[in-house]
Image (tube, helix red, strand yellow):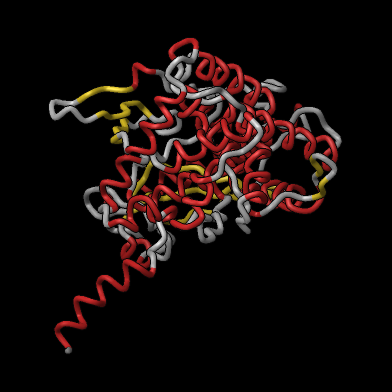
Length: 406
């Protein structure tokens, strides 16, 4: 039997300090919510026992009439739908209330992912988004498909049937049951990032009036932020001083050092050309570009180590600033470089960004606001994730105190 309850959403208020009245519809152990379009203050809602007591204010009488009408309409729709189809769902009822069709497959979440992938592929082809991001969304789609096929025995799933049970069963499946490259289970942070993909795809659907709600918004797990790995001044100098017998290792070394002194991520390094180098009125050279991930304008001064690397590859074809090597290969060769240089850290290309934020800039007194701007971040809190407070900085500040207490 269908049941409807009314409650106040106190985390939202209109300009008069009133909160919206929402309806919660329950059917066969599942529930959905919708707004009634009516508002009332929390005090009056409680004073009138949720509009059950005798009402004297016209506004409250109107609210009561509206929610009673909605409750009767929900029951009428339910009985009408089940008369023709005993398996009618909450999605069918809600769609009927909103005047929307309930054709089979119209709200298939996998179909929505396919539409988003085609749209995102166009953006990546013109350089607005990276190919790596496209791969991430395709991987998220494959994981969702596997879950639906294995746990529900289907090859499609109505997005309006995705509830909290579906969401957290999906999380469990990703963390402990899914497999990729012969490895069982996915790390917590990777799962959170895949859920970010699910949310983004649904927002894509909402903006284009394909769907009306985002069921993944209830998932609120956060990334577990660990200390960023970066190179110390000694480790950075060790790599700079090393000449390798292999040309491939020397190229990777140069690309890695370039990132250490500019903060550019792999996709940004790959896209740089000589046109990105400009000379200012003081005769200083800058690298000027928009970051591929954030589309934020990012100007970075050309430091002497960077200039030496640029000069070394001045004769590359296509006006490229540096040789092109895939991020996967770079990370593979960086492991060799770490071993040869006796660096007991897992080197990846992104360690270079962390090194720029800590050892190269903050460690030398550059203000975090300027570091954030050069790294192309939209918020300074993003920079704080990369930037570690070094003991040398703490000691410099404490030296100032020492003079006062001497």
